[in-house]
Image (cartoon, rainbow, N blue to C red; front, side, top):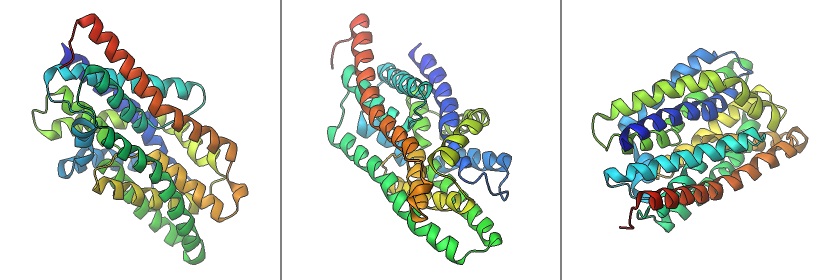
Length: 316
């Protein structure tokens, strides 16, 4: 019963990931015609399905380092973590404060794991939070540097080529890092059994469906609300965010690609004058990020205590 519920929630989680993340990944380059949205979706879906077969360090961080999901009964804790993270993201998005689903999952897993009595590593949680804070700052710095280089020495044709390179780097980084939160939920749902391709392909298909639904709204949020965006800003943001997130993936640290993209867009905008940045929108998004992790952790912890009390589950 617990497995079936978590499998359904894992599918819903993958759809929401596509809505929340996929549109943001495509939105930065929408003002360049070199990559059509349909091609972009296909590339992203393929990466999400294939890259975790080569490396899934970040997925393991979610299920072995933040909290240790080691038994069949722990599926309930993961289900509560998913419910809490989706609830917080939905509430904040409904209030016009788009946020990071990855931050929500980190909080949900930590809080629900603690409430359910699982081993939760405070050191690992603190480390993930530190990398999560650093990723948009590094993305912003790289965006500031890259747009100066692109504007100074790149033709329109060259910019289209850089767009392809940036989008591929960004997609690869997302699949190696941020997307693996979906894989982590499916791993617990299926009891770490079966072929990994079963998890990754199912997550990728549902993720792709979510992208198709969420692309228009997510595209407006990043490419129009944060800065007055031009094609070089989008290309710089793709390259910068991809590099920052890929570096974190190599260390097994889950970070949010949407946070890194937002930071890179702001950095690229500041490089050409701070007036390009819509600081009110940027502040609104950052405030949502700051709320997301503690709210998800508190909700996950509360739900775990409540369900454990009703079920009569004793602490291990």
